[in-house]
Image (cartoon, rainbow, N blue to C red):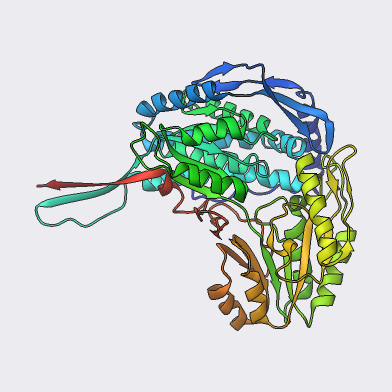
Length: 514
C-alpha cells in the first residue's frame, strides 16, 4: 500500500482541464430535475413529500427533487442500520478499508462530474469545487489507512503469566448530519469514518445540497458496501433530525453546522431515553469567528492576500473563514487599502464561468441574514467596499469590508457566514492576540509576521485549534492539518487526523492469565 498523499488539485489554466469541466457541467445539466429516492436497507423508497435542490446562482434551475423522510421512515433507517451492524462489525477491518479505496478510485475517475455538480448545487467556483472533491477523496484514502493502522489495537504491557491486549471495537448506529458548505467532503468524511470503523450510518444531508450526497451513496454501493450499512435519509431537522438524535438505538451523532443546532444536539444527546443502555457520544463542529492577525513587520502583500482569500473564498461560507482582520496600527491603512485593491479586481458572478472568483451564497435565508449583518456593520464601522446584494436571479453579495470596528462589536463577535470581513486596529502585538482571542469561538487563526519571538508567543497564546503562520486561515488538508477547534467551535475532534477514528470506537481491554 502506497503512503498517503493528498489528492492534487487540478490546474484549470490548462485547456484540457477546462474542456473536461465544461463537458462535465453539460452532463450535470442534462440530469437537472431528476427525482432521487430515499435509500433504506438498500431499497429505494419514494415519498410524496420532496426536498427541492435549487442552483443558488440561478434559483429557477432545479438540480433535482429528493424524497423526504418522516419519522416512520427514519425509524426504519435506524432499524436497518441496527440489523446491518450485527454483521458489518464482524468484517475484517482491511475489507472495510478496501471499500473506501474502491470508492476513492470511482470518485477519482468521475472527479470532474462531482465538481460540476458542486458548482451547480452549492454555487462553488471551479477551484473551490475541485478542492471539495479532492478532499472527499482524501478522507476516503486517509481513513482507510488509519483503520488498517488501528485494526490490531494499541500495544500495552503484559506481566509474567499474563497477556494483555488493548483493542478498539465498533459502537453501533451513527447518525450523520452533514453541512451544505462542504456538501461532498465533510459529508463523505463523516460518513466513511464510522463505517470503516465497523459502525453503520443513517445519513441526513443538508436540505440545500442533497443530490451530491445521494450520488455518493451510489458510489459506496458500487464499491461493494452491503445494504443497510449506510441509509440515505434526508428530512426536516425539527422532525427527522431530532428523532434520530433522540432515538435509543443511536450510539453516536456526528454533526457539522451552526452553533445553535450543535448545542441543541449536544443537549439532546445527553438525555438517556427509555430503552437506551449507553451514553451517546457526539462529534460536533460548530463554526468560528476566525482572525487574521497582521504584525507590524509582516510581509504586507502576503498579509493582504491572506486576508482576502481567507475572507472571500467560497463567499466566506466556511467555518474557517477569516471574517476578522486585526492589524497593527503602524501598517493598518496600507494593508486595508491593499485588500480593497485586490477585492475590486475579482469577479463575482455565475460560478459556471471559469473566470468567476466568488459565486452566490447558498439560499435566500443566508442572503437575508448576511445583508442584515452588513447593515449592522455600517452602523458599527466604516463601509469601505461592497455592501450590495442582488437576489433577483441568484443570491449574490459583493465582497464587503467594514473598517475601523471596535473589537467587541457584533460583526467582530458573531458568525456571519458570508463575504463580510471586519477590520480592527491594535496598538501592539500583544493587544492583537488579545483581540483574536476575544470571541466565544476558537477554530482557526493566522498570524502574518516575520518576528520569530512573536510567532513563538502566538503558538502558546493564540487560542485556536488550527493556527497558521504567513498564510490563510482556511484550506486545511486531510492528514496534513487535522481540523477542529476549541470553545464553541465544537468538540475539537480533529477531522482528518490520527485521533479521529478512535472517537468512533470503544476501547476494550482483554487480559488472559497464562
